[in-house]
Image (cartoon, rainbow, N blue to C red):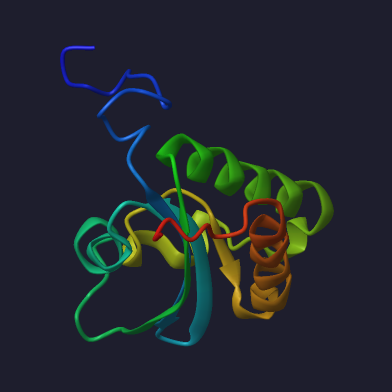
Length: 135
């Protein structure tokens, strides 16, 4: 509560109420192309700064999808990872394979999973279509 991590997603002003993005990144590690699905309020910052990927590693933001509030982005991202664990565990890259090249413990997939992840994001878009708030 002190840090603002626990706020109401409907009426609060913290991260859970602020808009956030579900993203899909491509990361070309030496000898291995992978994709990362996640959520962040600032996907580009997440890619380089927070994931600690070396500047000499080629990366690409494949897709971002705005979801508001942020807690919706978290729920949808977790549902995608759960689906991948249950239906496509062979597409998950073990931490031992990518090691310290990406500052995360999981949620990294082989590049061949990109169409599956795009399809999951398409489904999120169908459930939560963008709204035009301009009058």
